[in-house]
Length: 123
Length: 377
Image (cartoon, rainbow over all chains, first blue to last red; front, side):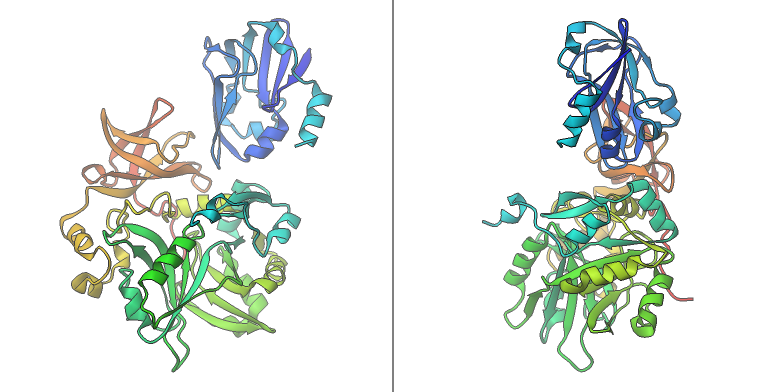
């Protein structure tokens, strides 16, 4: 399984034709206490660069843009009851949604963990 | 240019380095770098409700209005009863335009020394202070002196343990104040003005201290076990729970004191005699009612409705949210909105549209979280 990162602070786990998407620990730290996560319903066609989810923190609402295109196959139900899971476990239990990957070439050019880390260090 | 302060690089406040050393995340706000949070908004919010928080509000404008006739001069610009305000007392009021629109809301304290020249200490909002100062300079008579206390920092200490902690530091020097009372005292060589008021709904104090001593005082206060520094984020969620309006969001020149639910700030004598900007219109609104009202709304679930969200009754648009967010104390979202007066009764079931979804909302009495001001005994 490969994990990719975007400059918009999302992570993407790729397993075969399926990807799991979440936001990074850096992102949750920036957003602060998360009180609600709006996720795409199953079957939603997701387009790279368009809104895919919304994170509501105490402070503000923030859009999460789709890092790749595909069709949503599952939303993390655990976030409904416990959105703070994104704060406590952004890169594991606090995943957002899964999707089928429409075009694997969209993964090209995304960062790996080391590259993302130096990207964040440079911010 | 008049709007330089809005577009220019944010300025730093006296406690800038101190905030950064405390681990604050700094953001530009009202023309200054200000701490939005230290540990996290919810943790800071809860700390303030249970212990005490130190808020740096040095961005706010601290003004002195003095001279023979200062009270009368202020009464010509705001609807509050200044003439009856005794030395050492604080009152909430508003600067109004000629139409009765709200230019700013403010706190005025009578700080006249015994037998001295009438003097009023006025605290105005940071984002509006330059406009306020221009307005006051234009409208106050020449014999009244307006002084901008630019070298004073302003620190708020708020929470149920604030009084105990402050008393441990300042001992008897700070006097025995009740809510909306103020005094001045010396702490060593430092002259401190103190008022028992705030913006969280909790008991608390605001301290005006010389900028050069702000770090000393902030450090000394935060050495007390009850007091932690709190950022702007929690300041906003605390004031929202307390039902306190925020200028520029819940109040503006397009709103008037009566629609805003601030009629309490217009005393009996002023209602009878008028003599403040927009008095004719405002007195008529008191008499005949307003088209809209600022109300509290409580929402189920967890999805907050933010400023700008529209409020519906069925298909009819009946209002607009002016402040909204998640209430940490209540664990559900709350909002303030201006709603048609016909649909503003407590308990009215409405809906707020958020990203195309209708969220059920109920008109609720404010404050959402009860005030705990100290009024004696």
